[in-house]
Image (cartoon, rainbow, N blue to C red; front, side, top):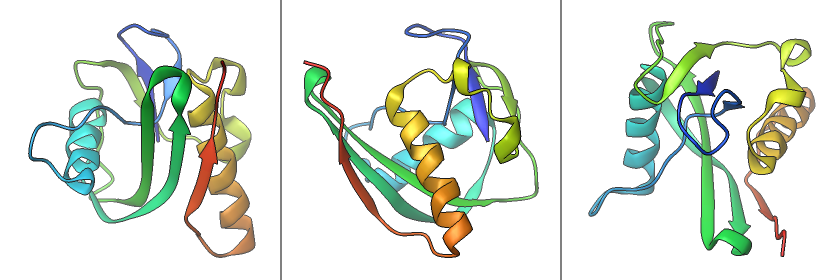
Length: 126
């Protein structure tokens, strides 16, 4: 599931549902909330998939994967469009951020291997 961004930075490019945590919110609760806000989707059984350091922007991304409940999704206020893509349909030239591209590629690699791990990475563009 990818969301076409309706906000800057990188408006009009595709991303995974993601965002910043609210005060007193767990990372898991934040992932569920952002998925609902950006993609109108409820998920279950989420698991940590990738933790990526981005020191050049003073951020850490914690990406999760899970199951889509009820097959329902819709664009939220921060998304122009939300779609499910097969691996051969991913618009690679229109992915908003390097960390999102890496997350998707790791997902399909793990899927082919039949086991999802927890990955750690650093992207430093300084």
